[in-house]
Length: 385
Image (cartoon, rainbow, N blue to C red):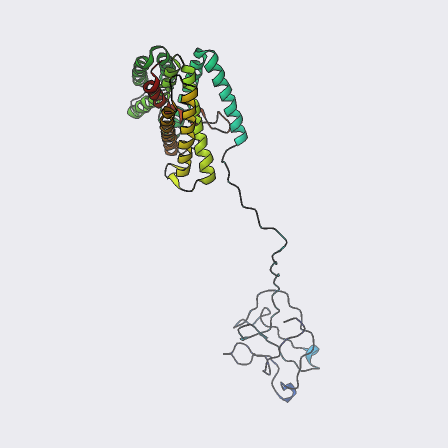
């Protein structure tokens, strides 16, 4: 319906809602106002857009009453508008509605979003390559330098762990005895083997207990417990890398350990990112999938067979398959364990020291629990060297 053509109701006069009589002031009905003779041809007045009022409201916002000299020369019949429900309503200007935009058929459908890796891969790759160069250079040229690299990584990892414990849980694990004892633990493991590592671990735990006595007793138990845990979790497990290095072919054993761990993590990430649909441990780490675990095992076993066959003296490919399987299991469990700690602390990363990776502890999570596994299997397969 447009503004110039309005339906004329079959009523003579102005009528409100159906349960009301004629409105006061409306033109009376009579012969001059017969419905068959009267036709309203004057263009309807323009009323500003706004809500139509009706019912009992009788003001200038309601239906317009046209009276006065201007309308005395011709009969006046108030027109009404019938909506889609066919109920008569007092006259009101139709609401202007913006037409709904028609879909543009020429526009292509939006492309599906690609999966995101969740990190800056460029920075992660650059940092990883840089760390690899430092490790390989120190590993094959001067073993003592590599022992120093392990000790530095241990101290930085302890600093990150104790800092997060204090920030998020209010636990004050003493860093000084942990850092000194952790560095000594790595050196003792390289020089004296497993015996030296255990003695250094015991002395470090004792130092933590004594150091904490210099502060008030409140929170003593939780602080020393966290300190002993940190001493075992970071430096003691890292000592097995130094013990591997002490063998005659120690550089190749450490290289095999690093390669298998990295390959396991890479296989888990690549397969899980591309094919992962079934969650492995959604309450601990929602990003890990069963498909990713299969990728970790497959990649690690293949790399283990190659490394044991071509890098390790007296090693065989089937030993490498077992070694790769064990590495994939320990690396996955270590990653989940670190995720449990970070979830309990309410953080994503242990630090920000390594762009694209997080902190040192975020890179040691798979390496630390894998070190004793590789050391033990190497001793069983080819001896202590």
